[in-house]
Length: 386
Image 1: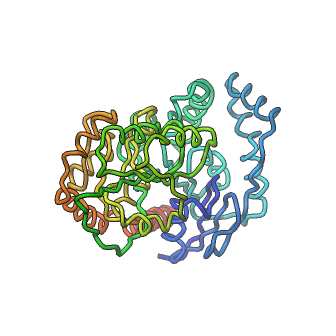
Image 2: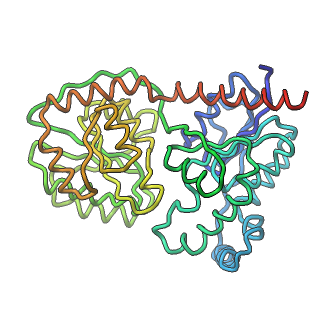
Image 3: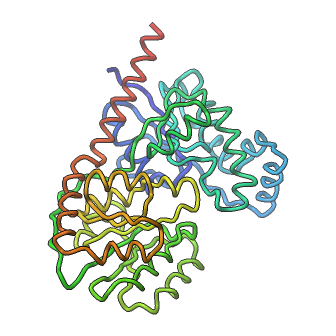
């Protein structure tokens, strides 16, 4: 396979976006990859163009809301501050790429424009039209915009991927475009399985403190667990008021701690001493129903047992692999009943199952898959040209 020129595009801070960085690492050894996104150039990235991350003014937000309300989607997109910033940055990027890989639906129309006649691969991450459908403003304004964008732009992509099977099926059902599954797997880590103590069972949850995730349900879980159990919450602040409310709610429990977040690359090693990775996620929107997040696979890399509610994507893997427990509902008391019945031997068996699964679900495997698929797409294009 000859070296190709690829454009990797994401409207995110690239250096702190693990999914995008894994794409770069998968493709950059074999191809010449130019990256565009927010923030500073990530370490190791050879060709990078920064997109200015604009601050939205109140008047700008109002104008955009009116454009969405009146279904003036082309005007909304073209005048969106992020797209204007992307367009400005793109003027300094050499053209004639062999393939453009766009992350998320918001970047797709611009990616199609920058690609010209080159194929575009969309990595959709989440299901854009229903991403935050639990919020009225999303259902009323942004959801219909993303639906219209998908209907117009998805048939024009050469390949598409997303994070799990349920989201892939919904894209194909609604828009007729098949999507491959590329899960959010972290780097492989050579970590030991730590034995579980009979008198102390340590639970850990880590991730963003987002109100839609109902993290308070995991705090309430401790109302139903005995003194063997403790819970540490390693949360990245998104909404200061929500995080403050969580801390107030947890104040009645001496066995709940809030600990500082660590860089994503260090999470597995930092949490290896815990026993159970906890993620009880009520399905407040479509994407939460079909969640298969980074943290799920980080629990595996940390060699932890996994405790979840009946989220179908995670449940399917926990059941297949035997690496955790699944409650029958998203109620705290239900999951607590399952946890209370576990013996240290049960938890150790689940940890060993996570150890085995970590060899299969890691970034090395997904990197190789992406490189093979991109090379196949490029080879197909070359055959078509010749």
